[in-house]
Image 1 (tube, rainbow, N blue to C red):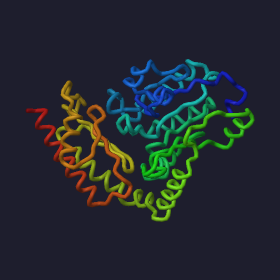
Image 2 (image 1 turned 60 degrees about the vertical axis):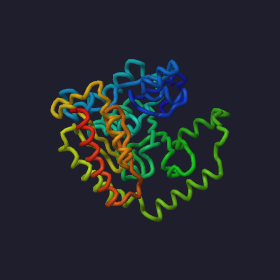
Image 3 (image 1 turned 90 degrees about the vertical axis):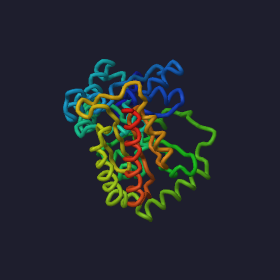
Image 4 (image 1 turned 120 degrees about the vertical axis):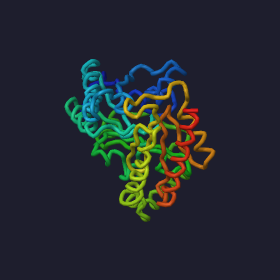
Length: 319
């Protein structure tokens, strides 16, 4: 354990535009500026590095070049703070609420290398990516990550009952046990109803091989159909993994210039809702996360409605 016997290793490094909850601590770990402004956050001991958002921030770099650059910001921050002061790095395998930010292929291998070099703990936020969303059981499986801790929620119960948790490596638990009481209880910790629902949900996922079907059938089909929208004049990029997807709305497909002060994302979202489609707007990025049991026919309907709503949005923006 790299942090054992080093009481100064307390600072947690996170990422700009990451999301880790809305409590004071959770919002501090997250990198949402507007949430920080609401409560004079982040709290001490949390710092942020740039996100691996190539489309929005990669400039003239290739995706792989940008992925390396973004990962190297972790090493830069570790050295700036001092290795002896850094406790952990926390990140979502794929940023969800931040806009389905799928990192370049070069990003996670470089991050793993840096964490190993400096013996820094890694906490993977699997609240969105966990339980089949990426077509693997966890986003960490998809990227070959070996986290020391994983936060879990949403897919744990498929949302039927609220439940969240933290999976912790045995070595960390052993260190915690040596330190006496670890005060971290909640009013509803270990609630038997939530636990029963989670167990039944996981049983269904396993026995009906839902995650396997996502991987072999529906995820490849969704990603193929979704990318057909790339030819739309309003679309700058379509990206996604598993049953996650994002569509970037732009004024100029080549330069990635946005429609300024137009609210393109919210215009599109309104048309989506009016036409029976749930797509969330994160700025001018439209994101989707359909249920793991979505059918081929429903994917076809999703893409057809998305194209219709893009047409309607473009007409307003150019009107």
